[in-house]
Amino acid sequence: SFFAESEIKIATARAGNVIGGGDWSEDRLVPDIIRSIIQKNPIILRYPNAVRPWQHVLEPLSGYLQLSEKLFTEEKSEFQSAFNFGPHSSDFRTVQALVEKSFSYWPGSWIDQSKDDDFHEAGLLNLTTDKARNLIGWFPVWDFSESIKRTIDWYRKIYFKSEEPEKMCTLQIKEFHDVDISDYDPKVPYKGGWYETMELENSLRLCQEVEARDILQTLGGDYTQVGVNGSDGLVYDNV
Image (cartoon, rainbow, N blue to C red):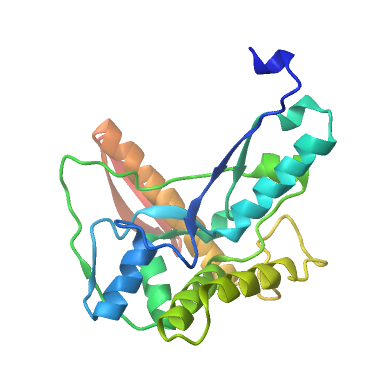
């Protein structure tokens, strides 16, 4: 096309479900959580079991910068393409998990108002980031818990006026940049020195169950959860 014959280098980038301090938008989960805490009202969840690739906003931003650097310094056309910047699969969590983890840092409450209506919201959103890791050496730094902790900490300190927004942003950028990743293993999530195996297994199993549920709903089928030889399994009906 036009850009293939020009000197302009273009790439496209997509992020996961981004969270972080400073977002006050309407109808977004984290701002709604914060407003519910401040107003002392429970947050209403319509799709608590929906699984999303949550990540702190600094994660994809670091990826965008690394990709931009490659576009500027490298002549290889492989960088002039599409890239995903998302969390490890172990950090794909439900809406309910994000809400409850947020409340562990700043207490609040929620109400389940799950809806079975004509509006369909995907149970599982997936994001594969192998290309970004292999080509530009990018990988996520803060895990699910750390991302939420940093996010809630930002809002708490701003609300109680213990820090200014700009100072909080600058501090978190520095802390993100200064994380020691010398012992990083790309095969497992980096968790700053701690790793929750059971949490990983539960998360991956949940993703599989939600994905199976969505496929079966599309096909008009159903499933039943059972125990098989001491482990969880799925029995599919009417497929």
